[in-house]
Image (tube, rainbow, N blue to C red):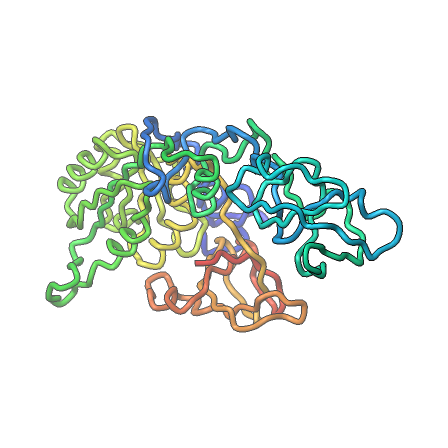
Length: 425
């Protein structure tokens, strides 16, 4: 059927590539936003104990093999495996001892028919080529007795088996977490070079907004968007500039936009990006010399999202409804910020769930519906209950949900047991 209405309300207008009614498909909007973001220039060196959450600015190569020497994986006894010839049991005389931190070469040579007591992490003494766990032997005075054969290399961690000298431990762009801290510490580095923090300026628009703690007059609401986004943006790799709330006045909006973009790598706003008479953001962005690349997305919630540039900064204008602002930041805005930080443009991690019940919907926009895990399907996949269809302003729903069930734009009906992508919160 040929579309004649060019309306988002008309399902016949939907097209997987171009969206519907002039709306930009979600994946296309993400691609366009990412194309505007180049990783920030500038690096700094930070101590390892404050490096958590920062972004590596250069590859980390192993300066020596890991582990740096052959060592025992167990508490036990090290010996020459060739001494276990014929059929057991076998007896070996205990003639030495080596513990972790000691120089194994000073412990002596493991001779024929001998064994050394050895402890986890201790280096393997000369001519020893196998370790037997202490639980698998009987200690008989100065001897141990084994009943089962032991193969060469048993319970020995070989030099370089974790990482060879010069091999890549962590690529640049890695977000430094606990695991990465461990890898960096394992090669003895007390500090690392990281990307400078991404400078993000944030402000919310709306003459009706008041801050928590202030009294409300008729027609006023509390500014939850500001605090939702400040919490989301308080990452170790972000330098946040909170510019508060701005009334719906064109001149004031243009002034704040201009000031925000002077030093920021990214300007994030909420509200004022729709088509109402009091929605001035896009017009004032253009008036300040900015450019809009994406305006209106085939996404629910979040259709009014705008993406563009201003004075070298990436601009992301989020919708004013709290859930829509939160959702569009998580699905789109955060990925742009991550690319700016040097983390790359990794896909949003998703898992697979099944719908716990059937429902119908109006097709046309890809939907990110708050959903709660309520059980498991017979094949072990999480079952989710999809919450209220009208949810873009209901912040209580995302507090009750475990994540977003992703409903394809073309889907008109979801049956109980249908598989859906799921973005965890």
